[in-house]
Amino acid sequence: MVIIWIAALLSLTAACGTDAQQEQVSSSPAAGDKQQNETNTGDSEQAASPYLTFQDLNGSTVTLEKKPERIVILNNELTELFYQVGGEAIGIATSAGVAIPAEAADVKQLGLINSINLEEVLQLKPDLVIGQPLFHKDLSDTFADAGIPFAILTVKSIEDIRSNAKLFGQIIGKEQEAEIAITDMDAKLDALTTDLSANKPSYAIITLMMNTASMQKSTSIALDIAETLHMKNIAENLPSGKMPSSVPFSMEKLVELNPDYLFFVVHGTDEDGQHMIETQLESNPAWSSLQAVKSDRLHVLPPSMFVTNPGLKVSESVK
Image (tube, rainbow, N blue to C red; front, side, top):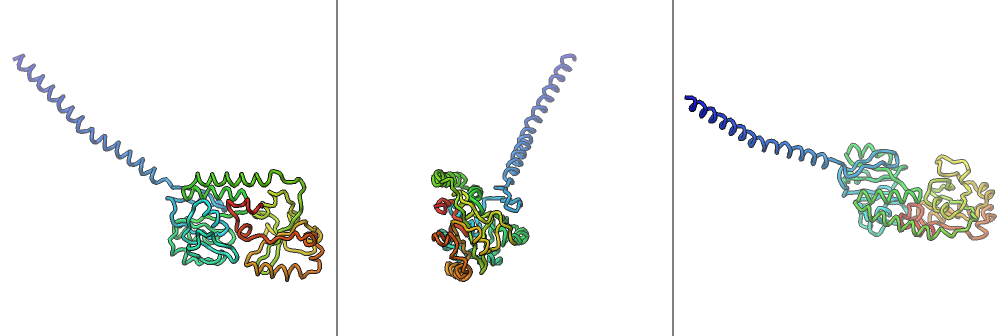
């Protein structure tokens, strides 16, 4: 009887052990599923990370969920630079007298920089629009409502060329190429400026636009290039007008300060610029008394180099 009881007990113990093992085996796939789900969740979180986040000129945060493929450049100050780092736009703005990069000859033109055809911009379904601070800052809500990333960018200095070239490289996925191009630009600038004389010749840059004249005071690519060449701007300490970066033109003040060089930046066609020089400047009897006029140190600066900006070819502007 005792033997039968022991045998029964051993049989029951073995059965319990088998059930426990079966339970452990059947639970293993569930554990695997849990681990797989956790892995998938991690992948989803990683996939949800934006392609690029940056701040524009206004301090607004611009988030690109994926690499943009349909980019519109409304600020034609930046079109040349964008193409120089390998970018391609689906739409661009234009300006009178400013050449379009050869690579963008067949790209959709969306109007002048100060009168954009917004309907055509939206019809292109862009995934990034780059605008200009003066003319396009009021478009931010329109693009936000349409779910289109919008960035205000500009170029007013050589450092701006560097920072925007680097940003464009990140946007289009060509960071290394952009860095190489920036290094090459800096090397060319160094070669042109290392042996400059300590003497600082004076100058004025006169902007001619829409039948008005002003002298540039600060924050322009032309002024930054002149500073690189160790030149002194006669307008830097004069009181600003409506725009803090410029000074209302005064022939009396120009004669008083009498710069060694005079440079002209024309917003418009060459014919417009020449007409304004003749009617607003040369027609004044005091014009001929200027040292720069007597020495024939007058230069109309090419719009592609100074109205927009030369981009990575800024060394050519320095020359």
